[in-house]
Image (cartoon, rainbow, N blue to C red; front, side, top):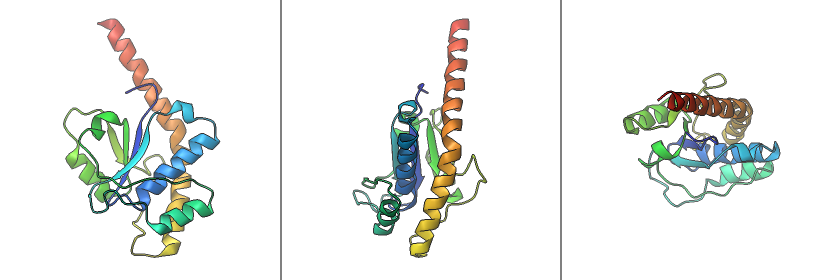
Length: 170
């Protein structure tokens, strides 16, 4: 784990929830002048249904209506992501279970629910629900991101300090 955590958001197809979470996270850390405390921010899907596609139009619309820039092409999670990223957040328990199943033994990523630092609620897939559900997902993303950022940087700093101490003892 580096001093600056790399963060990956993951849903099923990478066109609704995870690109929205990525956009909200990137926007939040930029507007709060803490972008320099983070490494790479990205999103992916557990499936490759939409590989190379732009986010769902409803995702894009909600982000743009809330002045949150979004620019992403869908991709599936890669084996290498589990060593590249320090934190991988699944949007729901199915995503989480799939990620845990895919995670190579001994990889560095902490895999957890996106809502881990809040109420551990599911972020339901809005794809078949309708426009209002996309706004609900956006609001959840805003709430979780506000609670996550400080925890992620302090967890990473504590982890790096522990590694440095252990290395000094060798």
